[in-house]
Length: 359
Image (cartoon, rainbow, N blue to C red):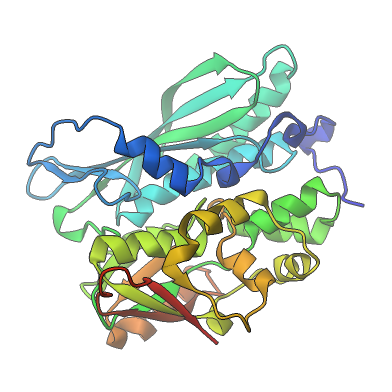
């Protein structure tokens, strides 16, 4: 039986208010593509270094020769029951997009939507305290925000950061022959599914928090390496979904060595028991046609590679001779399970798949 995880003795389980938690509540990639295709094109000034064209993690606007503004926002419904932990996870996830561009956060604005008639003020306050604690750890203020009364609890941040224009790391600049390195193990979505089924024990919950509240600040240091060509973070579309964005933007393909992809141990066990998220299946339905998954490989493993990650790890495309340096940077920053998971390869011919999986 999963213990009641509630800071300060608060018995309210936040996940009962939400239809889907964390980045698993993102709009499915196929439907999102259809929606965005209908969106009108806005102005694109020359100072806009990164916009919406490659589905990158944040917008980047050049301010001067040495500074560019990184701007992003992220928010979602509860992935855990504890309000303080929900705030921590959501804030960590939002700041990750700044780090994924190579930037350093400078301030945040809170986005708060709560069912006021159903949640007491002290519970909402604990969500905000959790988010504020992460921003203090990142060394930035929450300088304001906006709140509304809604049916499901929602929390997140607008995050702003700075980066040198020459150190911006897009998801679209990978090169053929690059090594692919993943900073965190996969399986957060599976653990969230286990919570809803009452299967995640206290040790598993602590493990989930360790990954989802670990700031990806190492991204700022990695962007200083010329050998790091492309960078993104793995969130709601799963490893395959975000790797495909790298492939499309860079006009390349990729090979993933499945046995080398780091997995959260409890998540692997639950996935083998059939405890996975519905978002994993939606992700595969949206982009599975671009991925070669051999029939001999187990389905549960594929479920983890399409598993929606909340506050997931950085995915790096770097020169092969820089692999040791990149891994050393990850390990020194506390990302013990960071590992090389594959390679970027030449552009596929029209109609070919972009990701091939090997043992």
